[in-house]
Image (tube, rainbow, N blue to C red):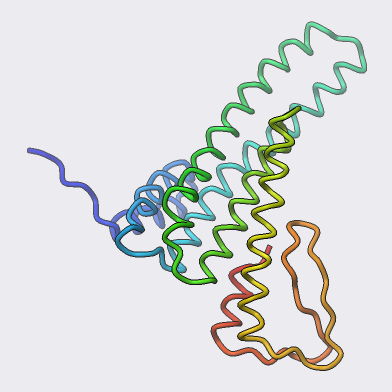
Length: 213
């Protein structure tokens, strides 16, 4: 008997189960299947968030490992333990290969499916910021021309997200007197800060919540 392919709804349900079980690699697999269906229907807010959470947890664990190993490597170098440094470099390379695979996976999904299918400015901002984030993660450990390329891609993605976000805010947001504009160092997306509560319609409030860095 031939197994039938799981539906989009089933994959979303399984992703939710995997999240609760803290099995994030499997959560990524389920959400990748969902993301590849966007040619038919764009991801919902729930699906976007599930995709983001899945990748954030998978990449977060490797980034933490890389930082720890890099710190140990520096200590061993300062002590002149070259044999240990050689072993650590090899192990760090394994972690970097995993980081590259994860980042390449989501960046491919973003470029091939998610960004082209984004029909709303809100979803486009979400995906462009995500693109910038994962190029930034690559730039954290890459060197030379590869690091420069990923750093430039990070900046371009954040600037595109910022431009789209500001255009949308001009349509939704009435900024009251006394408001200030600040730039977030994490990616350059603007946050509006004011002493008075901003007057937002539901669409703008959802956008600002969704696009938090």
